[in-house]
Length: 226
Image (cartoon, rainbow, N blue to C red; front, top):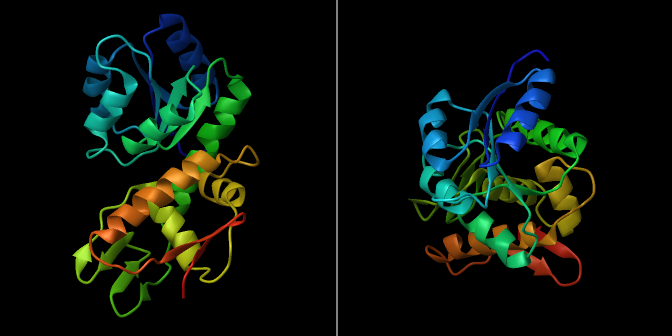
């Protein structure tokens, strides 16, 4: 591994922390571990490249911790959870999480997810120019979007969805393909993740415009309206 990425692992089970720290260090990562939210908040100062965050912790749980730090860290946050309900996924996405892996998980799957997220973040540094319309401006290099002069605050994944659709205006993408492209993970497309991100983007756009830039193609997926 050329560049050594930093990973923060937060879980209230010491055995899981020890196992993950060992496995991740064998892969060449720099690993910081925290057994609760208080320790995690202290170690955020190390500027991790990705955070693995357990949901079911005593005291401040993973959702609350994610919500409290999301405005200050832009790196991917991957929830580790035994929960699998659609509502839990939506709750996690609403507080700023990027993805889920369900316990018990294989270490190979976890390593693949981590690698995919880190590759995706690295590719975010692009030199693509902007996209302009009468009321909308997207600056792909600065990763910013304005509607009628108002900056729309977007998460990394929300911007990636907008970037994918807007740079391929008129082309229809199904949810599984979007998940594969944006999350960098083959297969296992999670329609709940995409659907919730699209919902949040539309709510943010609706604050400034009546125009719907993302169209739902029923039974197929989504496309950017030219």
